Image (cartoon, rainbow, N blue to C red):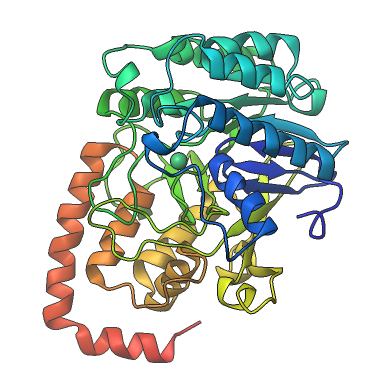
Length: 418
Ligand SMILES: [Zn+2]
């Protein structure tokens, strides 16, 4: 990473890990994914011990030792860089069961990260593993680091809670203050488990339905101050659009309020989620460019490690793509990401490009009609009911397209490929 950006502005490490440079750059990668990156850098072919293992093979000390090792590595590589850090669902023992109250892992992680956390942040981190600070200590710029593992549907600790660890109330307070602050303080939000649904498995949402609806309503309400949403967890490269409540499923009639960026993992992990075929990825990290005055995301560049070449002792981070070049958009604003979505939805070659990037150039097969529906509806609809409608309508359209428009689709693939 240091060879790509030796002096980033800051690092966001949440289930991700991001770095920013003066004018405008940030890397993004996953917390537990970063754990893998350290292991893989040390010994790419011989190690396969990762945090994504059964509970019987791990314990609390093992989880804490990984957090400690990674924190030391980041400090060593980027000693002068501010790091904003959050936990992923594998950064706890037992996995996914992150509680809504103080516990040994939150306590000890807050101590491990004390150089990176302001005193107030340490307080809320100990309580629920979330915090907010002024971004780079600049007045008028804010960052919120969330513990969205509290909303994860695999988390039995929080299943009956209305507002686990009081994080929703706290978010409401922080964002209301940001909005009330006259000039509308721009805010970045980062977390590990994202809202919405997984694009590689139809109907697979991550948050419990009530939490998803509440989270969505909250970011819709405060969209004016939210300039960037950054998540991981999927291990895949995708994004999500945020629209006003009650918008129709026709995205071209919608005015986007925001875009959520999902950065692929460093971990080349093949998912064990039932129903996902060959869901793996090459390791990736991402560099963001942003406007330092508005925090508007201007562009993103994804770098990847080609594992086939790495296994021939030719390891090295290579550029995979730059958003504005590959999708022919002006920037990474919500309006531009809407344009990317429209192109993915309607132009077969753009869909194929997106699909290749989705697995970080691992899955080079064709994204067929059903695959297109899965990806487009997941990107377009954060709301679970709207997603179901989108999938139903999309599946019906796909059936018609397959029976009547196949020759046209083939000719589009041939003549308009990017
Ligand atoms: Zn995860």
